[in-house]
Length: 138
Image (cartoon, rainbow, N blue to C red; front, top):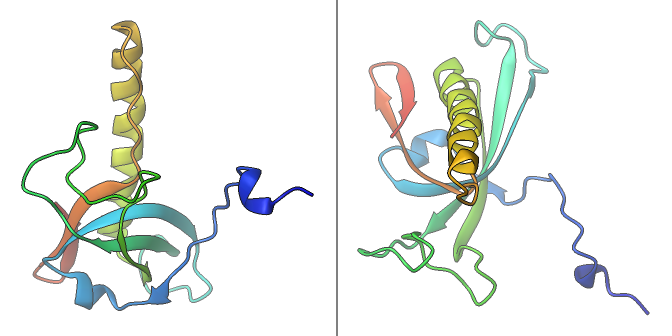
């Protein structure tokens, strides 16, 4: 009998108990997954979109591991920490995530020309900061 966990099926479902974005300000987190969709509540922002993120409240080390990551991992290389789900209508955060997704494509094209392995965008080590009324990723 096959075991589902052995099949390697990956889902784009975002898991974790909800957390308010304000509770993440100025905290170092891992963003594991992002989904940007049309909002069910238009008028909250200029784009009419909403972003859902799966974040990990991870523990970070002072030095990187052999893979270059600073977060602690289990034996399978998965980040250890509490997984939480956060929604935001911040057009700034959505734009910055989209810019990062475009930048990784360009960077991986350069790496391919040099015969280097591609980089994965996620998980991405980030801090969400509030500047005035705007949210930004650092």
